[in-house]
Amino acid sequence: MNVSNHETDIILAQELCVELRAGNGEVILKIYSQYHLIFLGYTRKRLHSTDNDKATSVLSDFWVGLLNAKAICDYKGLASLKTYLFKILNFRIIDNVRSANRQRTYEKNVSDKDHEIDDFKSEDESPEKEIIHKEKNKLIHEALLLLVDTSPGDAFLVKMYLEGLDYNQMAERSFGGEDYPQKELDKKTNAIKKQFTRDGTGSLAKFKSCLERIMKKNKLIKNDMFN
Image 1 (cartoon, rainbow, N blue to C red):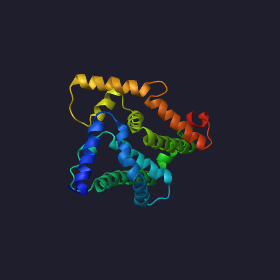
Image 2 (cartoon, rainbow, N blue to C red; image 1 turned 135 degrees about the horizontal axis):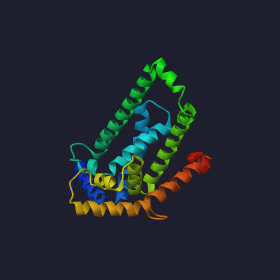
Image 3 (cartoon, rainbow, N blue to C red; image 1 turned 90 degrees about the vertical axis):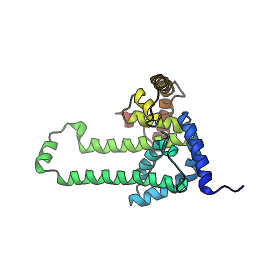
Image 4 (spheres, rainbow, N blue to C red; image 1 turned 120 degrees about the vertical axis):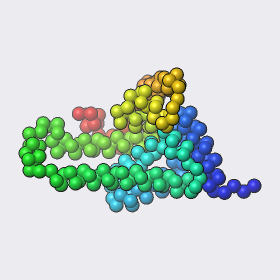
């Protein structure tokens, strides 16, 4: 019996949904390996930018965002899975562009008085420090995307950590917004804490390893990143 492309996509999405909800982030590699390069080219084009770091940052957020299972579980087969994911990615890109436009508008409209206030900022808030901060963020995004390649589940945890979420909030987001008994939430919270902090093989340890590889590639030392 022949199965249509959409039916095949529905079966795949359902399999991904079950695995993601069970905490198996690595399953996302089934579609990552198939679509990543296509999505990267599309992201560059939609951003109207040749800045690879900018496109990588947006795409990293997209892939990590899929790990919370909700988007994959919501797929109903009304279009191909590829088209469905393109739409989600497009929303990410639009949000990024809008955010950048708001920032440019703000910078364009700051008053002279604002500039006078800026003159009294501390050294930590100087333009030079801001540039360094942006460069560090690029390295972090690149390391996060590298971690998505090998361990998407850990990348999801690190991404939430970088957003300032605690373990309990990570557990809530991992459930994709669905209500779970407090006992299940506590169990998930403890599991996330163990996975995140485990020596050598935990999420944070893996991320640090990826970050060290990125720094080595860019010929940076630890003090360049953390000072």
